[in-house]
Length: 217
Image (tube, rainbow, N blue to C red):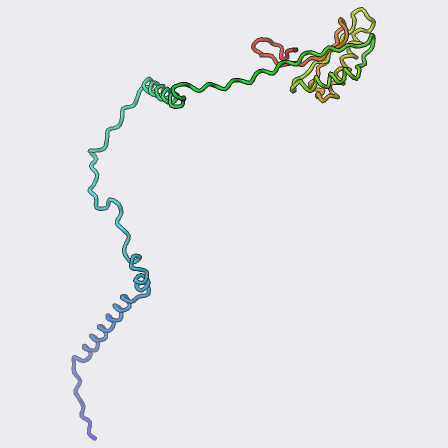
């Protein structure tokens, strides 16, 4: 068998290189057209693949600075006070009912003072009876937290009158303490010039009218 040798074509290498380049471009274009992201976007409807909307006013004309309003004139303090007064009056008118201001609630009536409790003692004695102890218990329940005065008296011309008056005041104070009055809220006074004893509620006074801080009922 005889083989004939074909002489090489000088254009063959160039043709081969051109074919390789064409195949490479086709392969790259196919990968770009059928990439996984493109397939996912196409499956989801294609909205995600579209670009974001343009910014608001992107294609609007530039603003005209000549249309900017002038700076307002500053008001004087007198004008500001007048405007504030009118606004407050209008606010009060809106808050009123039918043009009439609602009546303010009536204050609670003051609690009547607890009357003083006078107590008698046997001559030269400083012992309270069971009835007097019960009266002091009711008196202590009505004091409404105010301090009380336990006063004892004795005849001025009797021997040891001041000591007897102090013992009577102490008996009244002990009965008040047993009724629930704190010892710090009990004031004891003894006077040699009188008879028996008394319990009084001490109410606060207005300091602008009197220097005394307590008022005896």
